[in-house]
Length: 318
Ligand SMILES: [Zn+2]
Image 1 (tube, protein in one colour):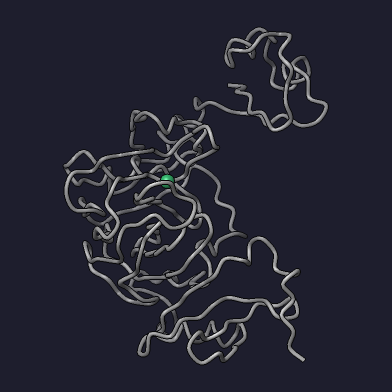
Image 2 (tube, rainbow, N blue to C red):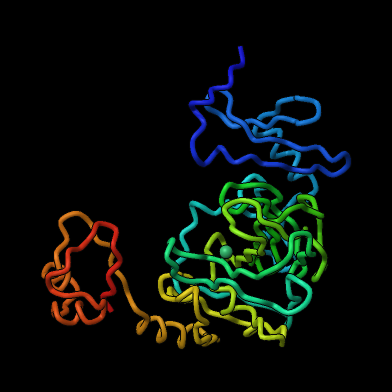
């Protein structure tokens, strides 16, 4: 007997996934049956397994999956997760390339930034928040193909578009979608409507820029000052341009595009480094392992020698 084991649903799997298929506006809900993932067709109640679901969403990918550059643009082409690259480790610096110099703003009208990529009180923020009114158009910044249309508790209703250079843009907290998985969309095409779904307080667009699952500082890539320019045809991403803790979400970081590997390696050498406090860590031990004086650690972090280190606390060590 098929039994829905509610208690076996793990936190990651609770997110309801809604997928519209090509012809008939079919919605699927991601569920768990006997500890494996399945999908329920919301209109007919039919339940299909992961393999059948995958076939359904990958239906129109070319047989060899490759594009004109010969590289496989459809690697990790999964339409059931915002991030299918969980097992990919990218070492920094890495390169992203653009064959055009401009992009289209994701919303019409003036961009009002409400929170940037960086640290904030609640923890790291990996996106770029733009104020909007629920129902406002949200547009794809570049030409691309829709890889994900669905709901997650954090991001709310979300569309992920993969672009020709494998960069993906993520549009979160939408109120509604206007594209389907596998749609090829033009630059500036409306992908959905702004909203306040998921973990969001007040209507806004949370825009992420990702490369193989790694969130990159959106302003490192795209200039939102009105010029609509992309910061370079070749952009090297160092540790700092993918780490929210090196930026404040409350003020704009100085953007320094790194156009080749040499300057990127050089830049990365001077970026700050951090240590996350584990059980048993002490200031003197940290000083020893990073060849620093205790006083140097204290001044870098504005703490005193007598400060009590908390587990999970982030300490700058360079
Ligand atoms: Zn955000």
